[in-house]
Amino acid sequence: MAAKKVLDFLGYKNTVVEVNLVKSSVMRNLNRKFRGKDSTTNVLSFGTPSIFPSHKGFPRLLGEVYLDPTYVSEHNEDIEYLLVHGLLHLLGFDHTRFDDRIRMNRLEDKIIKWQRIKS
Image 1 (tube, rainbow, N blue to C red):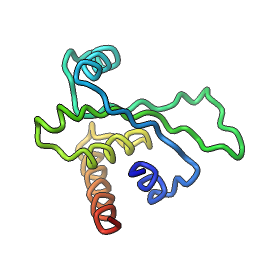
Image 2: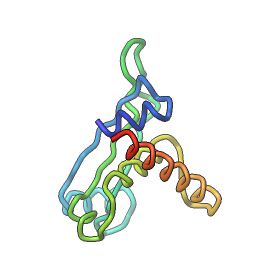
Image 3: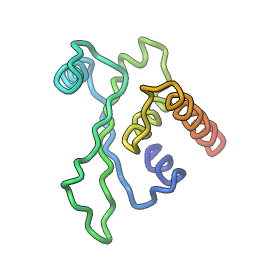
């Protein structure tokens, strides 16, 4: 439900995302296979390939977000923040350049503040 609220807040009303809570071993395998990193991580996002058509009247599948609750807990991270982070990656945000990272962080903070006010 949190992901849907964030998408609605960002103006993506007819869009859905699949959120997966996975074990560290699954996250490590995904990270190795898709990023070449042989370690677990907190969040991974995979967008739906553009070859999949969206049909009128049906929600558009934005992609998948994977979260490792064990990793998140062990590193004292905020799982809501990481969900927002993963969603923003699906929407095309990145943090490889400094200015992109600042822009993404500001939007993450804005969304988290909005979520906490709404709760």
